[in-house]
Image 1 (cartoon, rainbow, N blue to C red):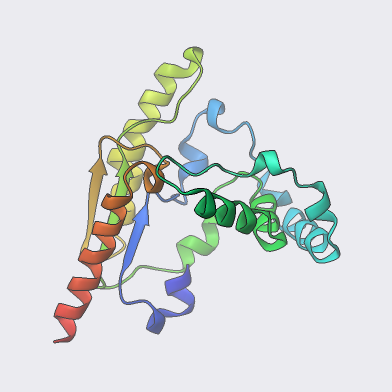
Image 2 (cartoon, helix red, strand yellow; image 1 turned 90 degrees about the horizontal axis):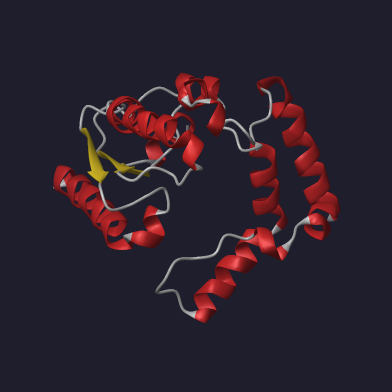
Length: 195
């Protein structure tokens, strides 16, 4: 979507187990628990922004809701991340998403990346799930890896997907070196094309 709005500001892209516009339609009932109806997305966003502006959201937001960083983070890094996650803008963004995927219409209308380098890193491990949903989650993981994520890679004529078998959706915390390596590859490709 950012590329659709500002194409001259994007030289290449790395997507890290990124959402796909069809995700909400393809996931089973086990994955829709926290989603809000599509017709409430815009009003929910307006309310979240209003609450953020007035400071009410900051008062309502619990420290317990902040995502914990993975192993290897220093105490100082954890404190910085925690502080950033509690900022009103971050809280409003999380609340306004309602646990849903990005607005699929805007994502679809934003178009592709042309021939800009694109690496799509895909989690090989499924999300943890209660035993009664294990079969459905495993089946959806195959849809995720072999249908939805490859569609993201096709957003560029130079796009490619890399399935990171030993990582889950928390890939940046679990295998940060893979994410950094992908970013370096895209930067090298962009620089090589400019020479």
